[in-house]
Image 1: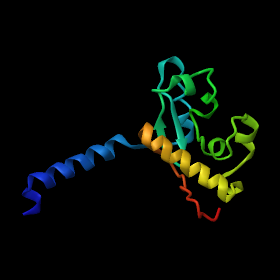
Image 2: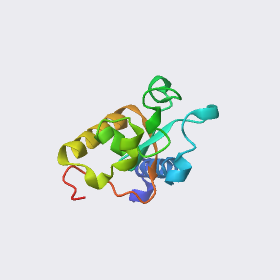
Image 3: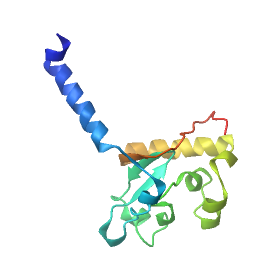
Image 4: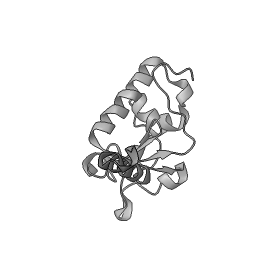
Length: 132
């Protein structure tokens, strides 16, 4: 039987581990992960939360990308802006196709480099063809 197969049991065990490692964060909780007072550095991109702690020279306090940490960095990365006013006034609905492509490219780049630690609660992932 499939359930008695060593490989099947191993795969099922690994699926459970992966499920445990990725958890849901709400936006308020995410604000605690900005690398201050020894906390890890997290940022969300298109609903996926990455641990970018291994790159404090980019994301740490006082560094250029720190403004994106502890929250949803999607807008800033999609429009390639680190200006706080852009991050606060633009919305996902305002992204054009090129900006959505840029967002997806950033998400893929971060997936290749950083550990995924969670997902943003209630987030509707977008793709290049999303009608926002």
